[in-house]
Length: 440
Image (cartoon, rainbow, N blue to C red):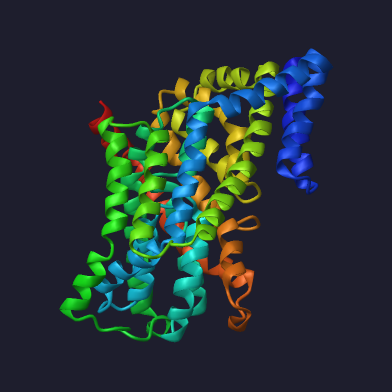
């Protein structure tokens, strides 16, 4: 069989295994193993798996993931999500829909420390949703707002998905971090504008204009309470952008500083809390590592079939505007985002489409932001909207809110994401201006 046909069979086999309910890592390794066996034989296939495992661990970029994950765990146990939320809420408390607005900006704020959209959704779901129900907010709006705003941690640096994208494409983590700042802020502003519009058009969705009155002293205390979040974010990102230390070093320093601040403020004083944070970090890292090893092996098998390069040559030879090819790629990622987790999407698509995107003249850093935007949308769209399932998991049963209710509530926020996506298409400088300013 022609090697290109073997590549197509490899992709179809992977999709068939995933559709059959086979676990993602096993789907990658099994489909890759079968095709690799027919191309290079059993012994060479085993050697290729070993090389993939080694390079997954040996990549310096990979070591940043457990460190940033640990920083996010310490930030969660240190109560920094509440500090970020309370500081924003103190400023917006007199605005109609203030709890939802504070959730949007609070999630963006907490994204400076978290890096995980699932963690942000889980924490804010437990903390904010009961409060919103106490003041009579619409349940669908509340849950959808939290699930959608949780995705900001994917875009606001430091982001785990940016690091994974960098590993697959050999791009600069620092430049990717910088590229996500403006789109992340713009998305949070778009969410807030939608909330203001909907609560004014439908007053019953946010019945009270002032949920809590903050006097000047309370506002000052609430805003001052955010200083650890601001300072940690400044140390981590400022160190990366200034060239003082690498992203991996930034993750280690951020984890230590977060733990020290939480210790001196009294929120983390027990060894078992520290151990629990480390165990969570180890568990998350192990899961990502296994998926990454299998995905890297799969992408190398695709490379053996020459399918990615053949598709790139064919598509670039077509006499059509490059924008149509880009839109087609984004639509594919959007569809995959509904049925696959982001790491799987990157492993399946980037080996094929990244050389094509670069050959068409698109900026790889800008395209990374576009990929993250598509995974943000995929995190809240059915059937595999992980943020929606996380939101449902943390809700007490007394609220009687179904998965379908949350999915139906997130679509206006998806429209906001698509609006930002169009702005990024029209004006790529929104993503490239800051990294070019900082790194040249």
